[in-house]
Image (cartoon, rainbow, N blue to C red):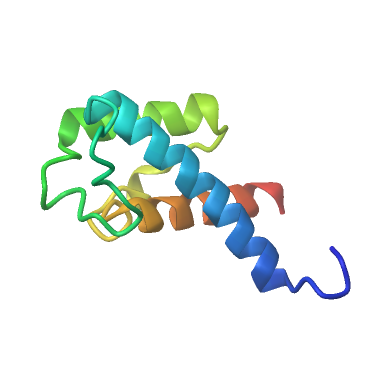
Length: 100
């Protein structure tokens, strides 16, 4: 961490990296690559049907195998799966807790 870099800056950068990975996965796996670039960090994934029960299971498998974060069942809820930003925040929180 550089003197001008705060812990909040580092957390935001980490979350950005996670959000980018989740966005790329969702685009490629569920949105045919999202050719019009409609998916962003605030897109309501549940409301628009991007995430349903099967897609959620596939996403959680990706998170576990590719990102190395196991999501406990208590964290699988509408608040944490609302959009890419909330998913990334959940993953980063769980990863930080596991590393502590």
